[in-house]
Structure formats: C-alpha cells, structure tokens
Image 1 (spheres, one colour):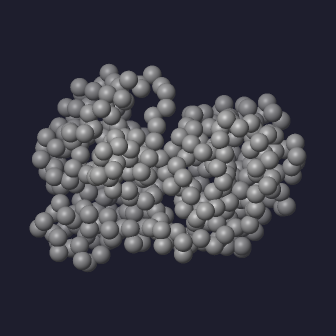
Image 2: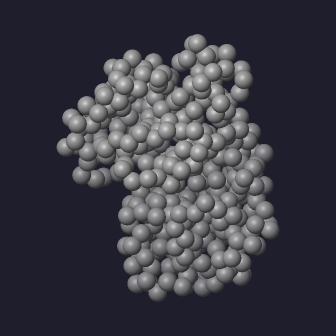
Image 3: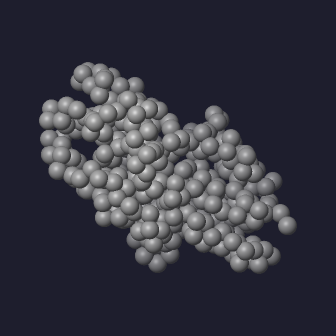
Length: 376
C-alpha cells in the first residue's frame, strides 16, 4: 500500500525553528505509511531540500506571498489543489497566510486543513495591514487549529479557539541526540580554539525579531567585567552584515565568532557555558528546546512564553532592563550543564512518541487507511 502523503506548507525549508521541528517529526515518523511533501514559497533551494528528497518527499514551488501578487497566487493555489487530488491533509505553517492556502484547500474538498501558529506577534513592517487582513480571515477555513504554545494559538486564532479547539503540538526534538557529553564539549571547544573562556552562545536568524543588536550590547558590557569571554553566533540572515559592523565598531572582532549555519548544533550547545536569547517575540522556540535538552543554562527575554521553560533552567529578564543588568544576571548564573533528557521526554518534548500521535492524527482523514494507525 502506498503511504499517505501529507502536504506541509512552509516559506522555505531552511534551518529555522519550525523547519527543524518539521524535520524532527519527518525523520521519526514511519515513512512507509506516512510521507511528507512540501509546498514552499521561494525559488531558491532550502537547506533541508536534499534530505527531504532522500527521505522520499516531494517539493512544490510557489511564488512568494506579496500583497500585489494575491490574485495570481490565489489562482495558482486553485490550480494546485485541482490537479493534486491525492492530499487529504494540508498542514500549513505560514502563520496568518495559512488562511489563503486553507481557503483553496477547502474549496477543493480537502477534509484535513491544519493551521499551525508558530509566532505570538507579527512585529511592525510595511506589510502589516495585509497580514492583519489574512489573520482576520483565518476562522472560516481550517478544520484543526495547532500551535507551538497556548500563547501562539491565542495570538493567531483568538481566545475562544485557543480555549476550546486548540491542539498544542510541542516543538519536540530527538532528545537523545542532545544529551550532554563532556567529551563532545572538550573536542568542540578545542576545534574552536577555546581554552578556559566563558562562552556565551546564541543560535538564530539575523533579523529584527531575534534582537541581536541588544545581544551585542549585553556582550559589550560583559567584556568589561569578564574580558575572558567569547560570543558564538550561529545562523545567517539579512541583518548579519549590520551586526558584523556593530561588533567591529565596538572592538569586539576577536571576541565574537560568526559561525554561519551549522549541522553540529548539539556539539555547539555542549561547548557553551550559557545560552543567551533576548528575542522581541517568539512562539515557543525550537532552539530553546534543544538548549534545554543539551542541559545548557539559558537567559531569555520575558517576552518569550513561560511555557518554554520545560526544565526549570531558564532565566527570564525584561528587555526594559539595561545591558548592565543583563550582565549582572549572567555573572550570577550557574554554568553547569544539567541532565534533562528524562524530564524532556516525560513532558512530551521528544519526537519518538510524538511522531506516533501525529501519524494517528493525520490518519483520521484517511478512513480507508485507519488500520495503519495501530502500526506506528
């Protein structure tokens, strides 16, 4: 019997939080029975594209969603769902723009239409009125409402749905891959040329939401009292060059390492002494789940939901506090790694068990294949 094919709708399959979450589930799910295909909205290849193809998935390209392009985009969506009748489940991860995809899916008679919220705010940009319009039309098209946290669900769907209809699908990871390992720590630090420095780490795209400008201000203050410290920045993004200029202007070039996109995230987390994450807003960041699985202590902004504190090891600070106050907090924290894997698994943040639940959920929209559910 051919596997059930689920259409996952994303912007691009790069190494961002929701994309990594999707791949975590994709790797763990029984792909002889459930297969993922991906609708992406960029013409350039994503970091995960090659792995998706190897795992048996297909990738369909759509144009970027732009206000002046709505009519063409809606037409292409209608064409897609008219010709691709095999999909009984569409799982959309593009936040407020999911309303457009799920409207076309509903029109084509797709029974399973999942809108999945991964944010708790939109931020301000010139597209905000159009994004608010898309958000306002959300109510009529999904069959199911998913979110990475209750706050993220309330933000996109409203309080009534968040209270009565929301399914929180944890941003789970393959927890055992992140289990703290002292050998991994020592080898990674040696490869990075680190000896006895205090290592502060950050993983995230270089964009306004992640607030790396403030992060650099904090590290600049830290250097005044802890000159033997290093900052590791993992990721890429549009604002990377401006952050590099800021680092240079503050005389921190030798103290800040720009590591780019990396595949060895568990090893890098083991090498860190503290994970710093002063985002302006988030849903429930996958990277904080990974950091806690790796046992590293974390200091994060209080704009991030308290639901993200799975292990009780997160420290929260207000973004209204000065860089000096953040530095004082950093210097007061423990840098000892914790053993968190059993707790992460118990609280539902390991993909092994969660992948079975997700497979069963998808299967309900394939009544002819419901006997598959017990096989996961």
